[in-house]
Amino acid sequence: MVIGIFAMTLVLVGLDQWIKMWASDYLQSVGTIPLIDGVFHLTYVENRGAVAGILQGKQIFLIVVTAVILLALAAALLLKKVPGKILPWCFGLIIGGGIGNLIDRIFLGYVVDYLDFRLIHYPVFNFADCCVVVGVFAFAIYVVFFEGKAAAVSAVSEEESAEESESNEEQAQ
Image (tube, rainbow, N blue to C red):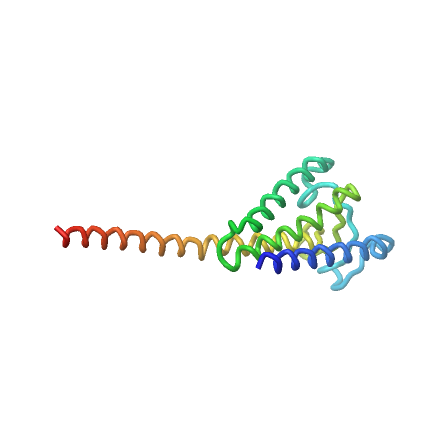
């Protein structure tokens, strides 16, 4: 499964870099292309910060933090410390998006953004950001809705086992 996750990650990084190359080559010269005028545009932006432009000019900090997180997630996958069938894929999405933006930060000094939802005045973002957000969101849903149930089931099983052991000991006496 780990090989499949890393293969998906490579595909995501490749797709992200390909779209960003198109945005840099074509979109940069036109600025913006309205797909749905006033609602959704493709707009070239060079983001020298993090989400919504926070931490402007802190490239070294952003590179180090991103690299540490990506290495920790990759190590968890490689060491098979990520339980279940869903969480490893969530980690793969996060890693793919993180690597895509990390490549931009290292080689360009900024992240190329181009998805512009103007209807809700949302900051311009990119495909790599989508991968990270979907991965984190799926991870959160799993933890909130499934991990809690798994822990509850485990606790009930342990409690039943303890009660059964006590019952067996009482019968043995």
